[in-house]
Length: 245
Image (tube, rainbow, N blue to C red):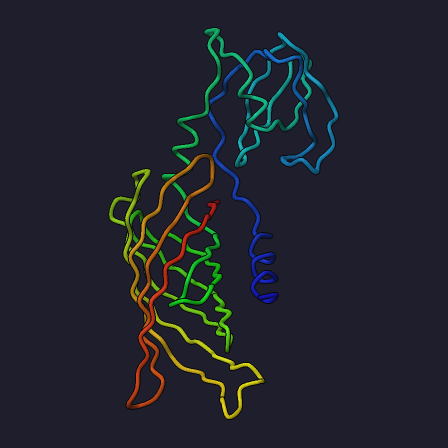
């Protein structure tokens, strides 16, 4: 279990991709103020505060951060949530709904975690996926099952097909191969560890929540090739959450 969390922490260090610069747009501050930072993140210090009724101009976008220029020429980064309190030149509230949908449709790299049941035992898995096209992605998964009498860890890689990937609710189908390792508890007399190849098929549903978060539920049927004459059939059902870059 600890190894899974260490791997997840390493994957989270992947830098966010920069987005194309938006069309130049002037916005008027409607809140008491907005904070300009030296870089696109909360870890960067605030160096300037633009006050209510002043105008700022959007110059560049990087994920949820926008580089803006204030009336006095100061240039800094502002989080999207603060810009949502501004007004357009037409006097209407600024909305980023179209930008959020565009992000979802253009998503490429996704990272997530799920919790569920492998047969009757609790299971945790993490995965990362990269979209090769609008409807096809390659996916890698690490998982662990903590049973009453043994513990099982596994990895798998495969392809996932999502025919309606542009919809908020999107079913998908996946196939893949991998390997699993089962380690019986030391208290069991005569039990031996098992390592075997596996293949799996899965059906599932993704649904887009908001911003960069996607929910997922999937049902997987796994075939483990235990030896030349014996296979094992297992079923799992998990639900989880992922986010995309």
